[in-house]
Each structure stands twice: as C-alpha cells, then as structure tokens.
Length: 81
Image (cartoon, rainbow, N blue to C red):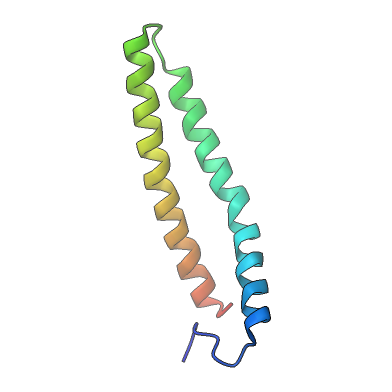
C-alpha cells in the first residue's frame, strides 16, 4: 500500500506532513507573488482596472496553486515520500 504510511507511528506521519508543507510553501509564495506583481504592474490607473486586475490575479493564483500542488503530489508519490 503505497503512500498510506500504515506502518508509521502517528508522530512520524505528522512530522512528514510538516516537512512536505515546509518544502511546498516557498514555491507557492513565489507563484502568488509573481502573479500578483505581474498583474499589479499591468494596472492602467483607474479603479475599475485595479479591480479587474486584482480579481484576475486572485483567480490565476488559486488556479496555479492547485496545479503546482498537484505536481508536488505526483512528485512526492513518485519518490514514495
């Protein structure tokens, strides 16, 4: 049974989850920061444009975080971590 960690004690599983979270967090922050910066620099000057770009930035960030999280899941499953 791969990936289920049946033989690991509970404290070991919590430790592994924390390590995975610490590995993924900087990548997620970088993605969100880059998307927000790119969309922020594209604002024309009106408040309407600001609202459109903020909304687009949030949607793109959520989408990319989901995609990258899936890629991390595939990676960690492949290395059986």
